[in-house]
Amino acid sequence: MNARPIKPLIGAAAVLLLFAAPLRSRLVFAGEVLVNENFDNLNLEELAAGWSKAEPSELSLVFEDGRGKILRLINKDEKYPFLAYSLDPAKVASKTLVVSAAAKFPGTFEAITDKLWAKPKVLIESLDANGTAIAREELLPRMGIAEWQNLSGSFTIPASAKKVTVFLCIQFVTCEVFFDDFKIEMAAEQIATPVTPQPNPPTANATATNATTPAADPNSPAALAEKAPKRTLEDGGMLFGPSFAKALQKSYPSKNVTANLAMFVGPGFSEKEALPKLSSGWRAAPFSVKLTGALGAPRGLLATLPDALSKEKPEVVFISGDTAPGRKATTTEADDWEDVAKLCMHFGALPVVVMHANDGKDEQYDRISQGIRKAQDINALLALAPLPQDTFYKRASLLLKLLDTHVFLRAKEDVKGGNKPVDE
Image (cartoon, rainbow, N blue to C red; front, side, top):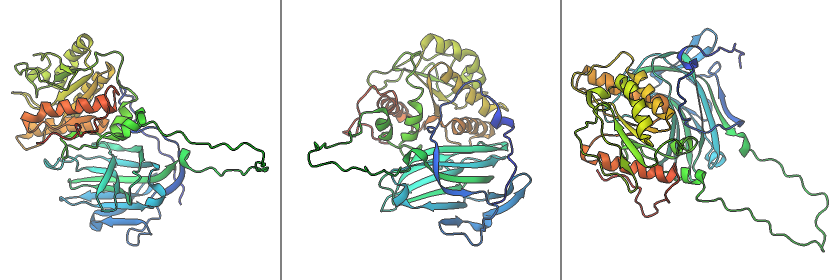
């Protein structure tokens, strides 16, 4: 492959943030390289074994100074252009893969109301023998960033996977995105080390020892994280799953908060609402006029929320970014919501964003909903869908129950199906 100069990260991707966000996946050192593609020698017209593509007219290789050839994907309609690589399931099932790519996403996109998951991404998909998806993980480039971003994550492939594919793609939304330096590696700790045979085999008089490997603890934090049910906004009304649980266990529960106390803030809530009934052991902090309605806009929360977090010390904060009468979106809407979420983290509280659908009410509503959605994407935050309204607090209670079981480790796993999605 052609040698290229190393280009340093600049701009927003290199700025140190005020508050630390939780990592989406654990740090794993890479080992055997399965794919290492910088696109300098790739031929889109004659793809090598393992590669596939869709919507070829939307794929191209373009030249960029300092990088050589890069992959360009563009979508002008509700199509699904991708370049993908299929892995050998016999080799990667039950193994942890380190997937990385450089990405550049200088534009934005309009979300599709009934497909909030649709966006440009690196998608890691595992299918079972029936062709049913049993795991989907993703790496998301930040919108509106003209500089290159380094995307990387480690993902454990299910043991039952019969097809494993990694996609560089745009799912249905209209936008343009670029990829480079695409790599898939096996986690180094999983590569087998040859066993050196003993030079002197045991004699007849030697005492036989039946060595057994201790069974993995099914109640260990890692095991409970793996058992976390995978939920999406479309299937279950929330974003949750093993990758979230693994990452959140590193920072939560915090010792600086009041256990089992939830707070509801943002313009989507009102101090006139009755306090919701939550999962067993959980209670809601009183609604505050300073934290809800028009005063619950992100700029307002950044001024008033620190006092509330210091006083109440909630363990979980639900942040609703709905509109309020007379409120206009700011030019930094997404950054403001991101700062609100990081403010909660700074005080030890776990933020959960309420993802209102972009249903085209008006331009202001669209900008506000897009802003909180972008903040969620950037930080891989937990999220809830707000509709139907009469099930929202039931759904919030279910998420708190899942957190108790798979993140806070305070409750036993519900083997009777109590962690199933709320019937909507």
